[in-house]
Image (cartoon, rainbow, N blue to C red; front, top):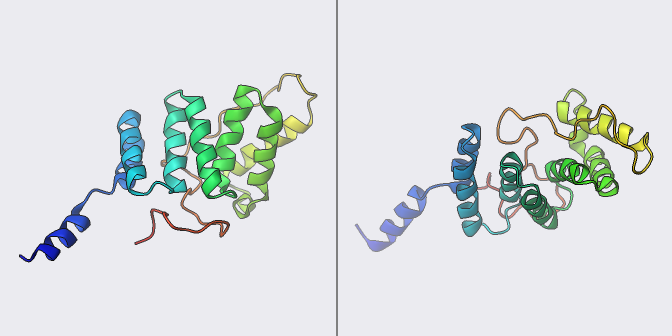
Length: 175
Protein backbone atom coordinates (compact mmCIF):
# COMPACT_ATOMS: atom_id res chain seq x y z
CA UNK A 1 0.00 0.00 0.00
CA UNK A 2 1.38 3.47 -0.87
CA UNK A 3 2.24 5.64 2.14
CA UNK A 4 -0.42 8.27 1.38
CA UNK A 5 -3.17 5.64 1.61
CA UNK A 6 -1.80 4.54 4.99
CA UNK A 7 -2.23 8.06 6.38
CA UNK A 8 -5.70 8.44 4.87
CA UNK A 9 -6.76 5.14 6.40
CA UNK A 10 -5.26 5.99 9.79
CA UNK A 11 -7.07 9.34 9.89
CA UNK A 12 -10.42 7.73 9.09
CA UNK A 13 -9.84 5.02 11.67
CA UNK A 14 -8.73 7.40 14.41
CA UNK A 15 -11.09 7.56 17.38
CA UNK A 16 -13.64 10.31 17.64
CA UNK A 17 -12.95 11.38 21.20
CA UNK A 18 -15.95 13.73 21.32
CA UNK A 19 -18.40 10.95 20.41
CA UNK A 20 -16.60 8.60 22.78
CA UNK A 21 -17.06 11.16 25.57
CA UNK A 22 -20.76 11.56 24.77
CA UNK A 23 -21.18 7.78 24.94
CA UNK A 24 -19.34 7.62 28.26
CA UNK A 25 -21.55 10.36 29.73
CA UNK A 26 -24.62 8.34 28.75
CA UNK A 27 -23.09 5.43 30.69
CA UNK A 28 -22.40 7.79 33.61
CA UNK A 29 -18.67 7.10 33.33
CA UNK A 30 -17.85 10.72 33.99
CA UNK A 31 -14.13 10.50 34.73
CA UNK A 32 -13.55 8.50 31.55
CA UNK A 33 -15.68 11.01 29.64
CA UNK A 34 -13.57 13.84 31.03
CA UNK A 35 -10.45 12.23 29.56
CA UNK A 36 -12.15 11.74 26.19
CA UNK A 37 -13.30 15.36 26.01
CA UNK A 38 -9.83 16.59 26.95
CA UNK A 39 -8.39 14.47 24.14
CA UNK A 40 -11.04 15.87 21.79
CA UNK A 41 -9.85 19.38 22.67
CA UNK A 42 -6.33 18.45 21.60
CA UNK A 43 -7.70 17.80 18.12
CA UNK A 44 -10.13 20.73 18.11
CA UNK A 45 -9.02 23.26 20.73
CA UNK A 46 -11.75 25.78 19.87
CA UNK A 47 -14.77 23.50 19.82
CA UNK A 48 -17.48 25.09 21.98
CA UNK A 49 -19.53 21.88 22.09
CA UNK A 50 -16.63 20.03 23.68
CA UNK A 51 -16.19 22.76 26.30
CA UNK A 52 -19.92 22.54 27.06
CA UNK A 53 -19.70 18.78 27.47
CA UNK A 54 -16.67 19.23 29.73
CA UNK A 55 -18.70 21.67 31.82
CA UNK A 56 -21.49 19.12 32.10
CA UNK A 57 -19.06 16.46 33.29
CA UNK A 58 -17.42 18.83 35.76
CA UNK A 59 -20.87 19.68 37.10
CA UNK A 60 -21.82 16.02 37.45
CA UNK A 61 -18.53 15.31 39.28
CA UNK A 62 -19.03 18.20 41.71
CA UNK A 63 -16.38 20.50 40.26
CA UNK A 64 -18.44 23.68 39.81
CA UNK A 65 -15.54 26.10 39.40
CA UNK A 66 -14.07 23.99 36.59
CA UNK A 67 -17.53 23.79 35.02
CA UNK A 68 -17.86 27.58 35.12
CA UNK A 69 -14.45 27.94 33.46
CA UNK A 70 -15.44 25.50 30.71
CA UNK A 71 -18.75 27.30 30.08
CA UNK A 72 -16.94 30.64 29.95
CA UNK A 73 -14.51 29.24 27.38
CA UNK A 74 -17.46 27.96 25.32
CA UNK A 75 -19.02 31.43 25.51
CA UNK A 76 -15.77 33.06 24.37
CA UNK A 77 -15.96 30.93 21.24
CA UNK A 78 -19.73 31.05 20.71
CA UNK A 79 -21.11 34.00 22.72
CA UNK A 80 -24.77 33.25 22.11
CA UNK A 81 -24.71 29.53 22.91
CA UNK A 82 -28.04 28.75 24.62
CA UNK A 83 -26.75 25.65 26.38
CA UNK A 84 -23.71 27.44 27.81
CA UNK A 85 -25.83 30.34 29.08
CA UNK A 86 -28.29 27.91 30.60
CA UNK A 87 -25.66 25.77 32.30
CA UNK A 88 -23.55 28.59 33.68
CA UNK A 89 -26.63 30.43 34.99
CA UNK A 90 -27.43 27.67 37.48
CA UNK A 91 -23.81 27.25 38.55
CA UNK A 92 -23.55 30.99 39.19
CA UNK A 93 -26.85 30.97 41.05
CA UNK A 94 -25.59 28.15 43.25
CA UNK A 95 -22.39 30.10 43.94
CA UNK A 96 -24.40 33.16 44.98
CA UNK A 97 -23.89 35.37 41.92
CA UNK A 98 -27.56 36.14 41.31
CA UNK A 99 -26.95 39.10 39.01
CA UNK A 100 -24.77 37.13 36.59
CA UNK A 101 -27.16 34.17 36.78
CA UNK A 102 -30.07 36.44 35.85
CA UNK A 103 -28.13 37.83 32.89
CA UNK A 104 -27.36 34.35 31.58
CA UNK A 105 -30.95 33.20 32.08
CA UNK A 106 -32.21 36.23 30.13
CA UNK A 107 -29.76 35.51 27.32
CA UNK A 108 -30.84 31.87 27.23
CA UNK A 109 -34.52 32.82 27.15
CA UNK A 110 -33.86 35.31 24.34
CA UNK A 111 -32.46 32.53 22.16
CA UNK A 112 -34.46 30.72 19.52
CA UNK A 113 -34.30 27.60 21.64
CA UNK A 114 -36.45 29.30 24.27
CA UNK A 115 -39.39 29.07 21.86
CA UNK A 116 -39.70 25.41 22.78
CA UNK A 117 -42.39 26.00 25.38
CA UNK A 118 -42.73 22.32 26.24
CA UNK A 119 -39.01 21.92 26.94
CA UNK A 120 -38.42 21.42 30.69
CA UNK A 121 -35.19 23.47 30.50
CA UNK A 122 -37.06 26.47 29.10
CA UNK A 123 -39.79 26.12 31.73
CA UNK A 124 -37.16 25.80 34.49
CA UNK A 125 -35.27 28.87 33.24
CA UNK A 126 -38.47 30.94 33.08
CA UNK A 127 -39.63 29.96 36.54
CA UNK A 128 -36.17 30.55 38.01
CA UNK A 129 -35.93 34.00 36.44
CA UNK A 130 -39.41 34.89 37.69
CA UNK A 131 -38.45 33.85 41.20
CA UNK A 132 -35.17 35.76 40.99
CA UNK A 133 -37.01 38.90 39.94
CA UNK A 134 -39.54 38.44 42.75
CA UNK A 135 -37.00 38.34 45.57
CA UNK A 136 -34.86 41.07 47.04
CA UNK A 137 -31.07 40.87 46.96
CA UNK A 138 -29.85 38.68 49.77
CA UNK A 139 -33.28 37.16 50.33
CA UNK A 140 -33.26 33.37 50.00
CA UNK A 141 -34.98 31.91 46.98
CA UNK A 142 -37.89 29.81 48.17
CA UNK A 143 -39.04 26.83 46.18
CA UNK A 144 -36.34 27.20 43.57
CA UNK A 145 -34.17 24.39 42.42
CA UNK A 146 -30.73 25.57 41.42
CA UNK A 147 -30.23 22.25 39.65
CA UNK A 148 -31.55 22.11 36.11
CA UNK A 149 -33.50 19.09 34.90
CA UNK A 150 -31.26 16.15 34.01
CA UNK A 151 -31.07 15.63 30.25
CA UNK A 152 -31.89 12.32 28.60
CA UNK A 153 -28.53 12.28 26.83
CA UNK A 154 -25.32 14.15 27.43
CA UNK A 155 -27.13 17.42 26.89
CA UNK A 156 -30.81 17.93 26.19
CA UNK A 157 -29.91 21.31 24.79
CA UNK A 158 -27.83 20.65 21.71
CA UNK A 159 -24.44 22.30 22.28
CA UNK A 160 -23.56 21.73 18.64
CA UNK A 161 -26.50 23.81 17.41
CA UNK A 162 -24.99 26.75 15.58
CA UNK A 163 -26.73 30.00 16.37
CA UNK A 164 -24.88 31.77 13.58
CA UNK A 165 -23.06 34.00 16.04
CA UNK A 166 -19.63 32.47 15.62
CA UNK A 167 -17.88 30.53 12.93
CA UNK A 168 -18.88 26.92 13.05
CA UNK A 169 -15.30 25.70 12.74
CA UNK A 170 -14.79 22.94 15.21
CA UNK A 171 -18.42 21.82 15.42
CA UNK A 172 -18.35 18.08 15.97
CA UNK A 173 -21.10 17.53 13.43
CA UNK A 174 -18.95 18.75 10.54
CA UNK A 175 -17.37 16.23 8.27
